Image (cartoon, rainbow, N blue to C red; front, side):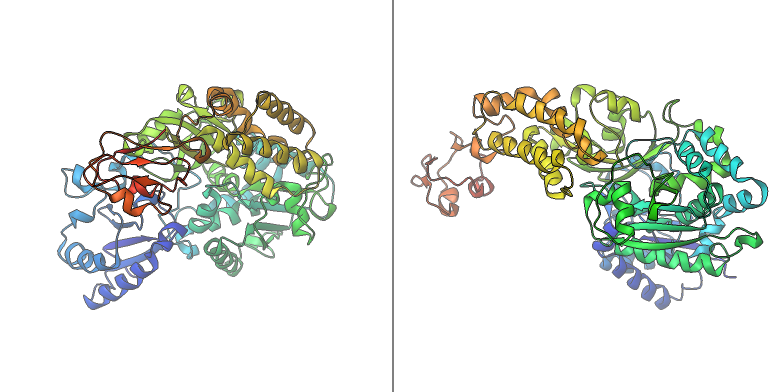
Length: 596
């Protein structure tokens, strides 16, 4: 066995891979061999480190030096200086300009200081394509304990006692779901992992599968033992090629090690897992539509009851949880229910992973204890709003969630508190908005997504959301009428009460929450034909102010000849000709052109 003195960890998640981290791996390998360091330094491709904004990321251990935005041409310097001479390459260290110390480790970075990582514990730490590394970090220990030291009911009891709630949407108690399926009589049952996250901006499940696929396999096997199932399916969208590939590798390795298949760990328990690829339909994130798709049919929801626990996949008892929910299971069994409950709140124990995006400095993946104030996530972890802009709102829960205004920024993040203010946890998307975002257009964006992704099976969702979108389209184009808000609210409540599945029932949430907290913006659009955020093109025009120096830059770039004026004199814009392409704003050297 080789004992390495140093380890170079390179992010191999989708974000960093798209920025060229695979090329970094190739260059590191070449340079380590060139300097005869390949027997002393281990090169590891990991999953996502979380701080996507800083990618591609490279971390060198044992120092823990965090290099960010690394380019291929930087690799030679890291190897020759850091690995060969022991000198940290300071100009590549994350936020090096604000640090007085030689290097900055993971624990020194504000982004990580406030996080508690359970579901993400191995992401960015191990090579996800090597089962031995997962085992070295207590991998499959929970499965071994369950099969040799616990009865199926004892496993379920621990999960129930932990208070773990489903991390995929509504937050149904996981232990109760397992108990319901266990109690149903039947010789054949199924375990399903829902990895079809379709919310705009969400990539929590993808990152777990890319960085720690064995955690999901171990948890599904534990679930199979607990409920009496011998077969499982992971339903993952085909747009996740890295996740799919690493799942396939993990399944193959687990079978080779006797951790999947017949007589696992020498016991009489058998369990195996299959992958099914989804085509990217948002509705297939709904559990009944997902199972219909696995069966080879068009992905459409079904009325409930019966629920999956009694009549799910192929009409048989089925337990279904999402990726993040499963990722918590092994750690709960290893450390106990009380340990899990020591984090989070009484109503929502544990942690939650969020995909932090939008108008935020530190875009990426974060995991915090339930009950953490929204302010801490946005400012301490997220680094605040770029350009010193004013925070305006945050969208949680994707198309099924709502917009939380600045006045509620101190709300604790947990299932019930978010529902109480008109939003929801959802799978964990968190999109931040600043003063330049129009909340009417934000509502229109999410509803447009829902209309496009509706399966069309039920009339409330198929027709009702379309009528709501037509009203919003009128409003943002300056054709809103008195009574439109009341029509939107009436349609929304009707859809919530009558749509077939949870996705349809929650589709109006972005509209209702923005009307509730930003009603004055809607009224400005309708009554004054004005967009307060200066975003909606049909409701604004450009104006040249007295800052104009007559440089003619705007005149020369206007594609439709809407700008007139002579050199060294103030120019003007003919609003009847202007197509609002903003080319003049981009070219103006004096900030003399404004939107009004």
